[in-house]
Amino acid sequence: MSSSNQKRMELVCPAGTPAALRAAADAGADAIYCGFANETNARNFPGLNFSSEELAKGVSYAHARGAKVLVAINTFAQAGQTCVWEKAVDDAAAAGADAVIAADLAVLDHAASRQPDLRLHLSVQAAANTPEAIRFYAETFGVKRVVLPRVVSVPEIAALNREIGVETEVFVFGGLCVMTEGRCSLSSFATGKSPNLTGVCSPPDHVDYKEDQSGRLQARLGGFTIDSFESGHAAGYPTLCKGQFSALGKSGYLFEDPVSLNAFELLEDLSKAGVTALKIEGRQRGKAYIAGVVRAFRQAVDGLESGIDARSAIAALKSFSEGGQQTAGSYKKTWR
Amino acid sequence: MVNSSPIELALGPCLFNWSAEVLLDFYKRIAEEAPIDRVYVGEVVCGKRMPFTDSVWPDVIEILTGAGKKAVLSTLSQPVNKRERQILLNQAEYDMAIEINDMSMVPACNGRQFTVGPFLNVYNETSLGFLAKRGALTWCPPVELSLDAIQKVTALVPEVEVELFAFGRLPLALSSRCYHARAHGLRKDSCQFICERDPDGMDVATLEGRRFLAANGIQTMSDACHFSGLTSGHLNSIGIRRLRLSPHTTDMVQVSKLYRRYLDGLVDAEEFESLLEEQNLPGPLCNAYLSGEAGWKRTAIPA
Image 1 (cartoon, each protein chain N blue to C red):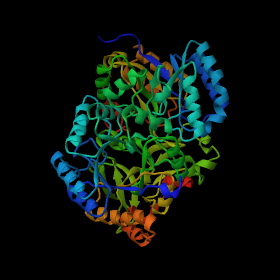
Image 2 (image 1 turned 90 degrees about the vertical axis):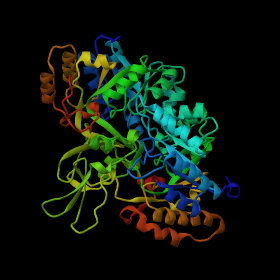
Image 3 (image 1 turned 135 degrees about the vertical axis):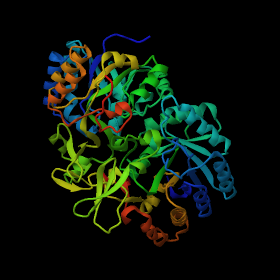
Image 4 (image 1 turned 30 degrees about the vertical axis):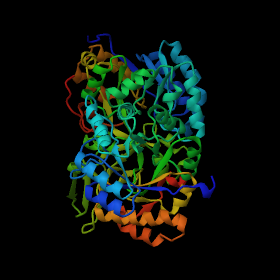
């Protein structure tokens, strides 16, 4: 693919609240993704997400500013309750959403058969990372775009795009799942709440902080110590895959350091690899994060064409990253 | 009507990096001595391990089939490159029963019967019904799914038989990163197959030394050893036809005999659990996923 026919990549931004949606639209998002305030989406945290009315208003606000709204209905429907997930799809269509992002066969099947005019995106939670899996979802349900699991490197994304007929979307900034999305039961093992079924990973009501004998603060999940912090220092949230554990007689960050994804340096490579859309994580984050990150990435994406340097805008995002540390994650093969 | 035929036993695929010799000896003994009805064979976790064991599977299948056991080929849960994708496509053509663990395999298996493995995200009746129309014959639910949820699904999709994950460290997560390699200061691409050092997985404890998880290459497992202490009557009433025992270095012949005796009503629940604990288990017993609670817990579930 020559650079002349590379389209400008779309910037897909998170919104956990109507205010965040407006902030994202104002900061230049091409598309905004959000979810309903229940277990049908993978950011089901207290105080977050949208009612049907809020969604309809959000769609109007975004459309007036040239932005699309994508509704994440990307958990797996609970047995005997698939109607809750089906209703979410119908409500998203009724609110005028531009697409639904889904992972479960039950949800995809309902959307494809009952809302044939509604565009379907395959959620990262479906963990489809081979041409065979992606073609299956495209041919069976008419999926138009796949959000790639964070298990692939940039050359692999390029190879994948040559073999599939649908658009690809990749995460470029924010929280990073270390495990393959949708294929992790660590949080349910510790707490009993399945992220796949309830949309909550490391649920706040199972988190507590406890001082040990030496005065260090232990961050715990389901009673298991996930990390330990020096007294007086800011204690991080106990996300299981970014905790410290001991193995082989040593202690440390066994799975991943407490880092966030920042693939800014790879934007040009991602564009050359044929990626259609860039996704920013963070529906649980506040307006300031949304406005700051969206504006910086807007500059960065536009800068690929105009040549304007967005490095200082991106560098200023460091404070938004977990522990202030950033990584390019699986996009660089050495991460593995 | 509730089915009252005896609950069968299955041996799940070996999730660990065992050598070809160890695998051959293991399955020989299973074939000769274990009261197991079906055996899942093949590498499920890491495609890099495949070249070391590829040659052993035809013999293993022949030995198992010769002993009257049904051999099912279980397939890679996370294919990541061309070679692994091609292996899956080839396997879909084999003239033997197959278990799929990644959606990549659904189109390749179109028109043939298959088992839906525990690595597929099938959590509800609609998803299972969808796969049943495409050839799904057996379903091993994700390990975190509760008995209540399984029962709801079996009631609505009775044409698919259900096999419950019933013994072994719980497979909890997959990643593109290899934690064995990382713990040894290596990378996945140059891993030196270091996971072979831990035939039951590498123990992972909390900072205070509390047992918690186990690493097995790109897979993360529970430290605790999951078990099902449900009687045949209870399993039948839920619609479960078979229990899946996941291989460990403990004596799997003894473990399977113990399950058989318990399912046949020859030992009671209390004795079953205490005899199970006498085995050289990879971790303490746990079972609470079955009741919809945190998987690491051990809880009293009515037998």
